[in-house]
Structures are given as structure tokens and as C-alpha cells.
Amino acid sequence: MEEVVKLLLALVGGLGIGSMLTTLLKEKFDKKKFLFQQKEQVYSGYLKALSDVVKNKSSEEARQEVVYWTTRMKLLAPESIVDKAQEFFNDESTGCKFIKLREELIDLMRNDLKSIL
Image (cartoon, rainbow, N blue to C red; front, side, top):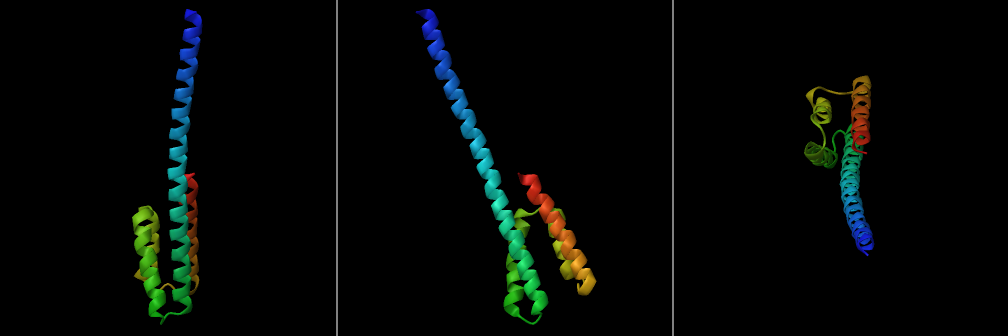
């Protein structure tokens, strides 16, 4: 009888620990997934807004979109991405320089997203 009680306690304890472990792992994954989705949204929004400004340099609305996405990016992105994004505004980034900066920024963003998951 004592062995049955020990077995039942072990099963109940094992189920409880397994359940807690599953819950903790799920919460951790959900947080990573949420962060990934937020960063993906910010990065794509920023790149789109930046492209819109290049197409319509005189558009105040397009410039405000860049300001909005830049602010959101400063909240979520690592310093390396924020610094690289700032380079667009340090100089006149036209032609080849703009394309090079954009590609470097995309690489940094891609690596940041990969590091989350």
C-alpha cells in the first residue's frame, strides 16, 4: 500500500512539475514571438516610410511617417540599428549611398530578428 501511495505522489508531482515547465516555456516563447512581431512591424514600417520620403521628398506627411517609425524603432531596436538609421539624416543620402545604407540596415534588422527566435 505504501508503494502505491509513493507512486501516486510521484505521478502527481511529476505532472505538476511538467505542467509548470510547459507553462514557463510557453510564456517565454510567447514573449519572444510578441517581440519578434513588434520589431518586424517597426522595421518594415520604417523602411516603407523611408522609401516614401525618397520618392516624395517634399511630402510633409511622408516625413512625419519616418519620424513616427524612427521613434518606435528607438524603443525596440538595438543601438547599432538606431545608429545606422540615423546615418540617413546625417548626410544627403542619395543614389548609391542610400542603397548601400539601406542594405546595411536591412542586414542589421534581419540579424536582430533572427537572434530573437
